[in-house]
Image (cartoon, rainbow, N blue to C red; front, side, top):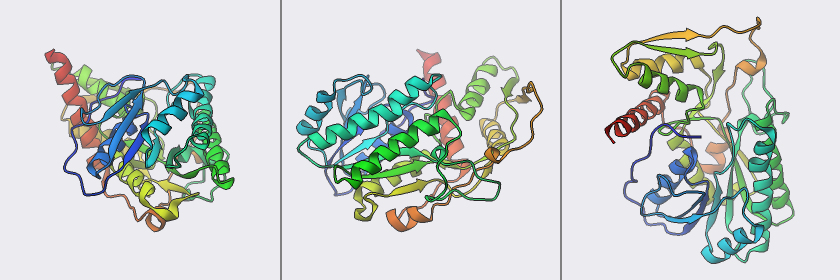
Length: 333
């Protein structure tokens, strides 16, 4: 899935050093994580199918993680001897349950087997999802002890991956922490997401000075949106925190934001003339428990020393700026 926008080069690094193997480094979240790792002084060994949008300062190792021979990953870990492995690979928008299972479950099992077989024992930071939990009634925050009965195939596949990681920790086969992320927004937000779709329609609809018609599904839900830069800081904190081993930690904003407000904010920030059209649904439906989400981040504060810093305006401004820059760059070529 193509992404909206690209990332800039990182700022200055601190004095800490070490190598981190970053799986899924060219994806939306992976690129933010790599930027934060380099800023924190780590050497980034990026692993993905193709080296698109990776800074020249990162080392790059091409590998299709979903289809590579198991031994190839063992050899890579033995060669790189990383201090940590961050798994930002996986599928979110895949239309097939089989592909979701392959990328979010089997890939994790293959990674755990490689870590067990390799010589080094790096810290694994597995990126999970708050969609691994059961939807909760309005006003009930998700916590790390919330029931785990996912409502979607994506959540189910991510939960299988999380449980595999925790089993490996329990048997002593891995040193790992799972970060369950809420809905991540920022520069590079995928076009398949709601706000990615809105940004694309704003750019394409006003390309010739027209008013854009932004067509969306009914905007009835509220979600917990977290900034991609905050997520990347949480990853750095997780690989540095001794007390995080064997834990599941939620990473979110800690607030429920109406989706309509986020769409309106994006249209406002864009400055583009637009008319919002909610597509009719084929049958009437009322709000359900799944239409509201907020995530408790108390454990992240305690275990990681982390808390969210950036606001909805910050994340939406980053999304729009990157989307507009990419559009202008594409038009100019």
